[in-house]
Image (spheres, rainbow, N blue to C red):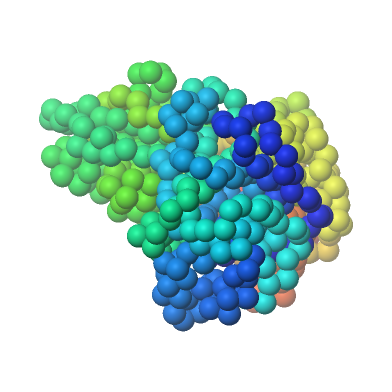
Length: 522
């Protein structure tokens, strides 16, 4: 589906050849883009394409209309991996040779059919596209004069994962379009050319099971969030792994051991108690799931809810040998509660629970800081203080809350904000975690919490899964702080009961956050 256009500053296409092009004679375009598609067509066909309804995404019959126009060669569209600017080179001639492609890394080429009767080729992003229904371009696209005729289109795309793994620098263009004379309807792409990362399926079934252990392959998608193990349903059955059982995945090359609980879904896994293990720096939940990136091939897909190891870019998107072992261990008896808990003063600035690059990932949307390369801990705290201040909340002190959670020591480092009539601010931090939250207490003893609530939401989901009644309602929102404030204010208006007067200083804020924690850890 075509992305919505966002009006932004104008940018002009660059049409001079660049030295990084793989072959002389190419024309290079840089186009402003905030969407996920690029469109190729002949300028003389503009009105015909728009009138056909081929690009009226969401309307009945659109797919059939696009297919019909694509078979005629009127339009070629291809999807992008993300909404970055378009960086594309266009050639007329034979497809690129292996030697020409060898300077970089490319995905498998895709092909289409394009009829250019006037020879006026248009290359447009969604922001500059003139053939979308009711098109109102907010930027200028690219145009190129080529010999009139019918062409076979070959599209090459940069393989960014391969470049990262091999630690090779990326150079534009992001895509290369080659127009080869003599195109035929048989070459037509009947739908948008999808962005498809290179994925081979040689990993399927490549495991060896011996009793409760299996030699496997392990794939990390990102720094700390998720990974896949190449076990399918047959392998899970052979291992005897069932809902609620724990297993560990060792990856010797990375010197990491990941403990997971097996469940039908991540939601069900989150409800299950942690295993009764003394040390648990890596823990999460896993489910069997078809992997869209491998044409639906089944694998064990795992979430790293508690993560210690950061996986480097060059180690992501690579199959590592590993060993899975079903653990003979039961669940931890969880007895959370504020009993015996304590508050200790601290200076949050000195702790630095998250690195600068990780902070951009966590707080990019909340602080409108997604365009930054890095965000220091001190700067993040200053920015958060300013956001809380917009709602009449000022920092009144930093505290460490210590309590028991089963046999574990539970610790949150907090910055408390007071001064608003019916709302308390709490910045909740731990290692690799920083979560700004707005809190309001009702006269029936319940609490409303709005903001980044991943930590509390996971705990509450687990407690509710074991039949506990939690007197706190969370709304997890990863969006600009002004929207979090507005959402919390709306929830206050709609909530039953009356608000309890919020804190005004450190003492009353400490008492209030203690009541909130008692409501959560029932």
